[in-house]
Length: 194
Length: 243
Ligand SMILES: [Zn+2]
Image (cartoon, rainbow over all chains, first blue to last red; front, side):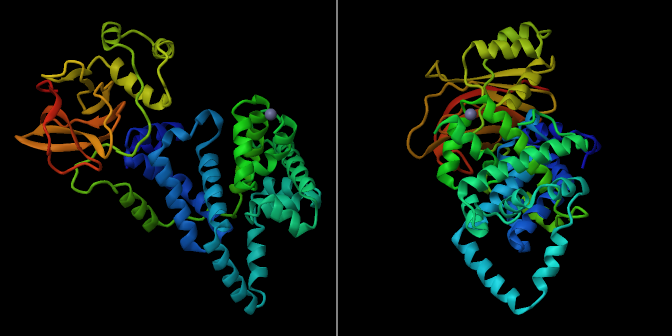
């Protein structure tokens, strides 16, 4: 890799990618693929499926770098959002559903397995964890089920036994609360509080 | 759906927790409502932080995965020496008359952008426009007109820098129908080499010009392109010597 890329900003890298610099994509991979992989793996659990998502996200960045708008957020946020969307699509596909059911059946046979996994999953960056943990359970649970489990809000409503409209508002209110909380802890969020 | 109804869905939308049909409703509304766009942007920031917090140490993405990704980027007609990306739907849209730019290299990019806007052209790639603009503003750039001996209205322009970075802009050949594509070729050391396929209705493309290339040509080929030209040249132009 050329030294100029090593020091380039994300926006400059995206610019270089638009100009067919494969080494720029490699540098973006070096910087952000770990986080993208981490999120995909958390959602999909299976390594191969998570790798597939990472591949889709980076190939998409290569094919359509314009879809990343530096004015609207960081490159990492963009890549994570892409990965989340892809992973959730996979989770909701029939094939994946079946695979997940099979795996869950297997895991049930190994008592305790899932519990350990959950503990690991709860390790999140301190401030975000604090903000999430600071929410009332009625808001935190639906956010976790939707974002980290990939459930639709309708599924969340079924799981929690709440009306769909209630789930929608609680998710929205929880996100607003987290937003102001994270501004207070200085995570560098920009934009108006909704 | 009303603004109030959509607004209620923005949180779940930001978490990808809507069903597909509802997602469409929100997308439609967002296109027209700055207030909802602003709220969504804030929800997305929070979602990104959640997504970025999935482990105590960022898991290293596998190296062999990068190898696979890099390999898949070359999934184009294998026989082609393709430096273009034929599937790219991005369009080069810089339409400032070349003479204007060449005559006024001191023009700022901002002014150029204003001109582009005033020409009412479809600019869906600011990034690409900026790339072309930067080439045009570089005093070292050269312009090559590709023309047709038989059809004066068929033209295309290539601007290129000494390092070989170049752009095909403003091709004016009629759009092809059916399973045909335009393909760009170069004469290099007496051989015709493919620079890649341009699609059936090209509006521009980035290209890389090698020092050995002397002539650029465009013809029509079956979709996907061919390794060697099979139909006559439509437009062509000579690259400047010692580029
Ligand atoms: Zn609205």
